[in-house]
Length: 143
Image 1 (cartoon, helix red, strand yellow):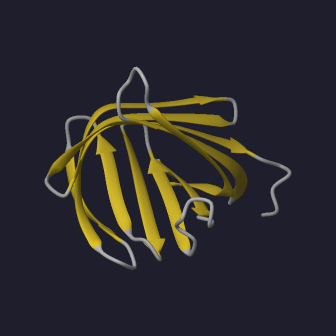
Image 2 (image 1 turned 90 degrees about the horizontal axis):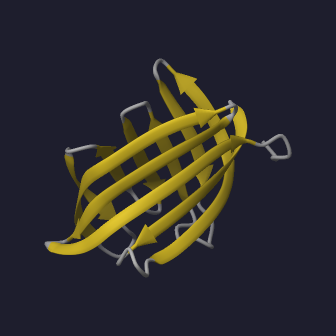
Image 3 (image 1 turned 60 degrees about the horizontal axis):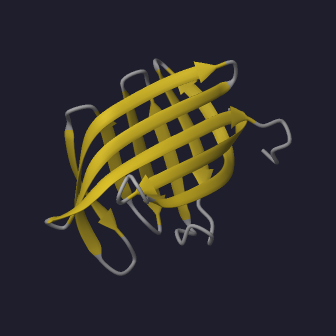
């Protein structure tokens, strides 16, 4: 597995004045068959300490899988509604996402994953979410 640096930019809410969150993590990446996998441990900065996050992608889809303290699986495929459960130590929340955009690009050793989707939490619309995920090899990583 290759050491990597992962930068995740998340935009939610109104497009004119979105809530923005940026997370930087270090982990490992591998290719298996026609899919790529990036794995990293969440920290206390994200509020999900004790959780391993796996990002799996190919040219048409992105999947984010969390296991540990927090558990969830979200698949992002254009036009495909994904219903799942977000399980925390305190409660379980049904969520549904309907993906409108998935763009996967690679330039040299840097992957850019762009996902846009509509989110429902419980039975309530939570708005539009945009994820920009940059995955790059990182020779200075501890792995």
